[in-house]
Length: 184
Image (cartoon, rainbow, N blue to C red; front, top):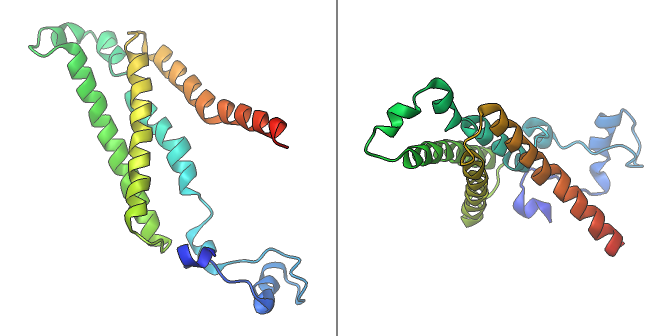
């Protein structure tokens, strides 16, 4: 059923030992080796969901961990306080600009990945893009919460990476362990 969605997936038949012969060096019909798909080898084995779920939040954290603290550490917070716009609004606009940068780069990567891998580009890609943007908005809320404590840059960076580790690695593994013990 994968050929309906992904045109690069090869259909396995009794004659598929041809791919097995060149992958393992054996010329037999036992299918003991891994079937090699030439289009998959061309596209690579990098999963875009890994990039969207793990690397883009880190990129967003990297861009925005020091929004308020850099102004404090450079001594320019007094100049921002003299502006007619409140400092909170300026920091929020800086954070929104970084959100737009990360969201545009993610959506463009999604479209390029979809075109390279011959994925059907219909409304489902728009749903995936909307889910990705809402995921980034959740991370923007976490970043805004930690920036609002008005701590130093190193504290913000360390706290945001700790939150990232707990949300992307610890909580899913704990949830998986709980679900496996309840439903073996």
